[in-house]
Amino acid sequence: MIRVAVAGAAGRMGSTVCDAVNGAEDMELTGRADPALGTTLAEVLGDAEVVVDFTRPDTALPNALQCLEAGVHVVIGTTGFDIEPLREASAASTANAFYAPNFAIGAVLMMRFAAEAAKHMAKAEIIELHHDRKLDKPSGTAARTAELMAAASGGEQPPIHSVRLPGMVANQEVILGDLGQTLTIRHDTIDRVSFMPGVLLAVRRVAAIDSSPLVGLEHFL
Image 1 (tube, helix red, strand yellow):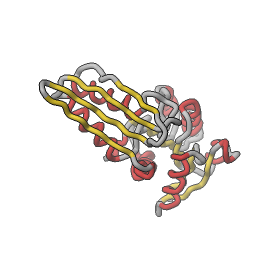
Image 2: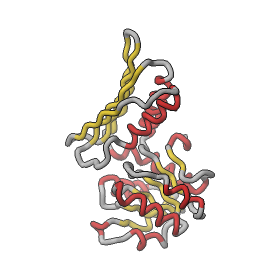
Image 3: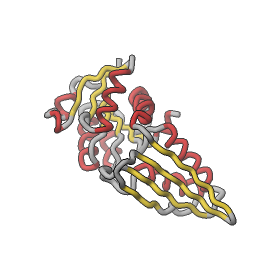
């Protein structure tokens, strides 16, 4: 059994992760850390092998560093922060860090298809649409998509347009244009449960990665 604690357990994503871990036959939920629950990360680290972090951009990095210092693997779904400090911390730790801007399998495929299309189309722009409570802008998914497209095409990263409106969860369009044609690649997240197979996959694989921090769920597919 993999012993899992969740940071941000009272939030929308965190509570969904808790339900997914409880429903997994090979995992045990050992702790829920969240200010709303009156429980700190330090209080749940002792019982956990892996911590899943869905908190805030300003707390995700300190949480991850705390996990690595304690020798606990960390799977990070929070976006909008610089992961570079994790490299030095990972080198000094027996634990690994894994970060994904998006855990939905469809979103990973969308990024892969967009990178391939960028090799053959003249220009592209990205439109990402999220709920109005999302703190970072642009989204981690959009930033990662732009990075992958630029790497694949050898050109500049495409512009990103961010929309924040109530009623949305997470949506992204990549629109590519060329002579007399356009191509649109779109992914829509209808429910947060779409992220859970990817989160559980990362929990199962994080201990075995050979380069930490590792970025992107595509490495496990």
